[in-house]
Length: 93
Image 1 (cartoon, rainbow, N blue to C red):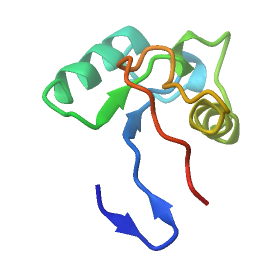
Image 2: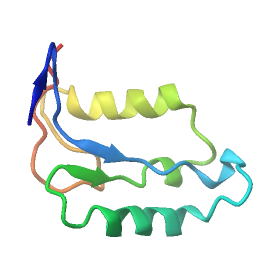
Image 3: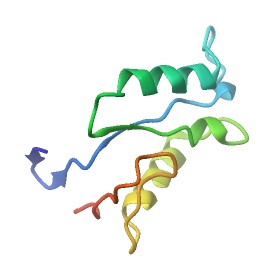
Image 4: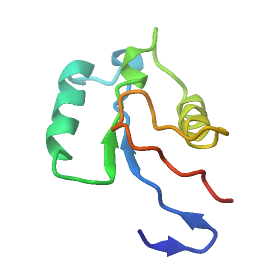
């Protein structure tokens, strides 16, 4: 991955929004997750996580970002629950 200043790109994460977001003509989350997975099937660094679509309702963007930040910044590195099993390194700030 390329380094850009103080940030290291660890992975790309596609997180489709919950159905309760309320945008007109938004396809159901299950279909958007499936389309995202098909779109990145050959990628080694872009992940799709359905965490946001599985919440009780729409989740604020800040909360979604906090979820992923915690997923990569814990003492025992791990990836988001639905991501491939390889550990994600600690984010450097």
